Image (cartoon, rainbow, N blue to C red; front, top):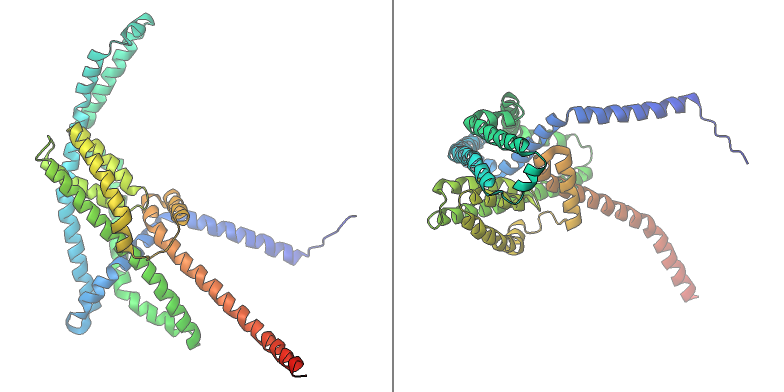
Length: 379
């Protein structure tokens, strides 16, 4: 049996216009991914700073939100400037030290490499091996001599980085200043009070999820960074490690702990490697400390601070983090959890409204059935 489906020209054109429009929209989003990432970072920074800015504005004459935002900005930028000035030089120094020891390590390996020496000579590969070792030493020495240039060149573009940072700062400032006015204009566009109250309640839930997660994660990361830095500082009096490693340790722990689930582990491994190049015993002691602290953080600190701000399952968290990391890198991994929490709030609201509408449709029918039953029982 043959079935013939006829589609008029108008429907056919509409279909392909919709497909083309979706393709162009996807292409536009992909092309603007960097701009969207900058906007996302600015948005989450604005949410994180909104409460401090509001508190500062309430204590200023005239409750100036611009003044509160400016004070908060000066404090944050000043803190970051001091922090970077204390952290970056030790990191560069330790990196140069590690790279500078590579030629010595290669010489030691060459001197102690007796097990495979006969095999290399038998197959006539001694010249290639020597050339490889010489190349490693030469490249390491050259890299160490130009550590500053190599560090800057590892960032895709210094100008692009500074431009992106400036855009984030300006956008965050404007969002903090103009955000309340934009919200008031948005709520005034609603024609009915019911819809406005419903959407205000929904926006408030999403704000609580995002701000609660951001504040909680910053607190947890700050606690972990403090104890990590303090532990390395104390170990510097016991083992052969420099005192100024404490600040890089705190910085690495704080930044990588912002990545959910496995960011802290990556930070712990990096710090262990950094300590191992100075004193292997110190690295071993730090590894033991790190394992113990992670158990305390996961079972006591994290649940207490976060206090069910997101309420996502482990599978949902891992899925969100994976998508965020592969789409937008490290920053995507950081902002993926609050985005997933907001989507969860939207989904719950949608299904609750659908259930309420379904109950309202069934209520008249249930009333009629009840009346019929009462009539039958009376007869």
